[in-house]
Length: 325
Ligand code: UDP
Ligand code: MG
Figure 1 (tube, rainbow, N blue to C red):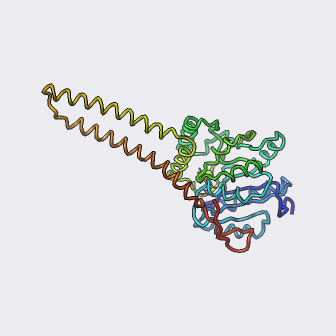
Figure 2: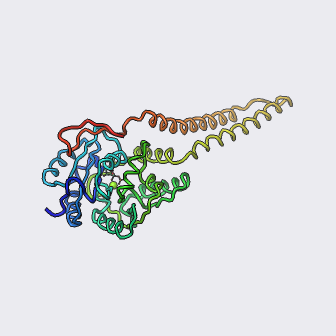
Figure 3: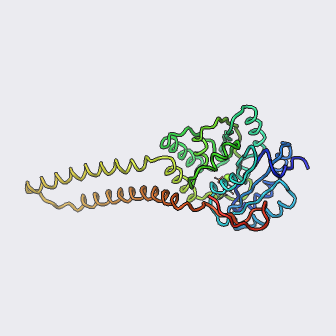
């Protein structure tokens, strides 16, 4: 069979995070496989089943039977998109590693162009840049736009608004990522900070081929909080400035109250009391929340627990039950 991997040293590793993708999985395999076979380089496809609860594991086992280039790594619980990609990167063996979503929003044909660009331009990272996101919902586009603007500002990162997690990386880049001890790493922000030479390849982002988005608002918010706390201390400084501001306001109010008391003024002021109480308790809770996010991150880092547990790896016989960060 053309393009089958030499078992020990593939040129290309394709890492695919998958969570409850039973609807799109057969389409994805059907479209990805010819692209890779045509590239005539040894490859491996590592599908990381992020604790799917639907038919995904069964379909994957079926696909495994007649695709020797496929490897399945199953996580014990749903650990999130970024953790799933990390699990795949950690196990990849290729000289080049590409990460791609399973829902065919990232067209597999682009992989061949990325590989061509990487070799021709002698770079370590090829970012897939979306030229057209009209297939994403308006909500997704706006929230994504706001996310990238915020991160560029807070973290002073030179990141493209249109680069997601579809990218090809050299072995040295992947080794550098895997060596990072941090948890909850947001790869699209981490990779640019590593400073490897890079280029971009443009592609049209298609609509999800089947099934529904596995990124509900709660996961989007989690990703945003991880991005902010992982890359910026601006919110903490904001809390400090607010406390100074609160102090000045409190001092002025105090002076005014004493002055009006001494001058026989009334101290009735239900409305002002309630407003001040409400505003400042709100601000205090906000600052506590900000602090909590950073403390939580520090706590997780100190615990050094793995960000995912592997239940099964098709490259080994039987469940491994191994854990890695
Ligand atoms: N995904 C995952 N774990 C999750 C959520 C998503 O592995 O907890 C995978 C999902 O199967 C897909 C990719 O991450 O391959 C991107 O997810 P999705 O397409 O649902 O996100 P969207 O394109 O809507 O942002
Ligand atoms: Mg998608």
